[in-house]
Amino acid sequence: MPVEHAAIIGAGISGLTVALALSRRGISSEIFEQAGELTDVGAGLQVSPNASRILAELGILERLSKVWLEPDAIRLISGGSLRQLAAVPAGKFARERWGAPYGVLHRTTLQKVLLAAVSADPLCRLHLGVRINSTLPSFERAADVVIGADGVWSKLRQSIPGSPSPRFSGNIAYRFTIAETEAPGFLDRASVSAFLGGSAHLVCYPLRETGSFNMVAITAGNIAPQAWQSEPTEEQRTQLRARLSGWNAAIVSLLEKNRKLTFWPLFETTTGSWQDGRKTVLIGDAAHAMMPFAAQGAAMAIEDAYELAAFLSNRSAAEALALFERHRTPRIAKLRQRGAFNRFAYHAKGPIRIGRDLVLGLKPPLSLAADLDWIYGYRAVDLP
Image (cartoon, rainbow, N blue to C red):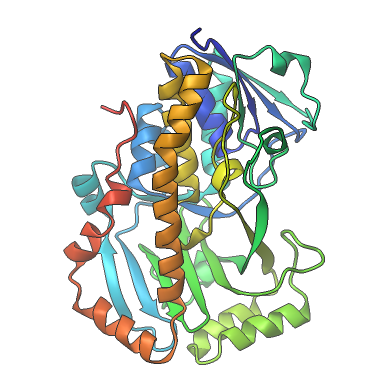
């Protein structure tokens, strides 16, 4: 029996994207979100070509392109000397090599554009203020397929035997923003910059629509009692300062002077089943929350959404979900491996760091770009 109607749990990036992707296949959906309103949350994000070509297919890329920044390059820089170690060209190069743009923007901007498209789509209906626990609403049970897009703390996941579990990764993100007018000169106004140092790295890029720089320092750390998105204690600031030992004084000063840091413990999921063999499936962070070391969290949610809709378009729910999981898990596993490698390389110390810097210095930009072809050049199922 073909799928005609879906219930989607969660109105984040993955939930809104899958609603639009299903609509393009003629499948209606209802989205259930526990929040009473969709507020401005989160921070900046990078949308790589593998995701932006899907957003183009869904008809929303043009709106994003008017407000986001397409960086000239993705630069790797020494956190100690501020010397550039390597750079992957982006901008026009990304469009030519991978057939779609690489953009940076605030997460809220993407969510608002997705929400506007969903609200204007007659096949999509959004319900706010609906809390999903172990008992599913009657209108959800009537759906042909139930899609869990409710993030790393997914409630729907509990209904799938052998599903993944959330766990603390051992990493902390310290997030903050700086007004572009107040940003120091070593921050590139036209690129994504990753400053690398022993035990930590700092990712910085301009957010054109807010006139600010998105700043994220990631290092190992312990989970705090307050757990999620809080202001760091003095003890946690001291720990961060210790992790930045040997870093350039200008970067250390930047972090110490900014009193509006957000302490953000990073959680991931274990491996496990994404679907129940019948009608319930997980996508995005609900299925495979991963560390941001490959900057692919949002992109994987968008890929999941589009490809799930493609599998559901001409198969029964049970068959489509099994094929979807079998198709997606190898790519997710490979990206987790890349993220683990990047963490090792970014936080390298001593002789390993010296070797890393030498290798990066010898690699020409085109070689670095070729190493990303399997990520950025990926074309989702059924994309023209």
